[in-house]
Length: 198
Image 1 (cartoon, rainbow, N blue to C red):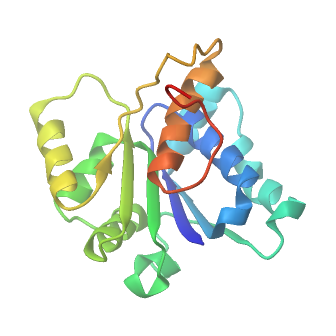
Image 2 (image 1 turned 180 degrees about the vertical axis):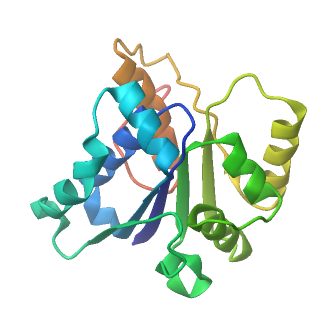
């Protein structure tokens, strides 16, 4: 059973965490704990891109789901260092940062744990667990590239939010879902999705 942290930062791409949360609801039998951390910038970007403030209802929506019986879903403030995943003893085995801003990536790459997201990423790396950074910025400058190299060498996975098109998506949601599905694959979750050659 997975214990997952989903961190949402202020980079463009709010559709990705929205899709990930919805998909995680559908496979709740595969995880035990789900922790969500969202920055203030992420909330502003969410409202701008998606035209709603649905993130305010996320906690209640999860609590109302009957298929989450016995599961733990909790939302944390980005400065709450008492969160269980701020320590390796919390045994969270997967962290997804979607979208991952270049500022967040830079702090992780340099070991600056100045909020819960960067601290949790530091913990995941030091414990040799799975960190997936869904970066969306384009183009990259050399600092971005070197930070991605550093995180990769430390054991993290850089997963650019680059949709695939061989499944012939016809909506923005379907195109973005190709990224969300790839992230869930990388996390080791069993999902139903388009597979090349199948």
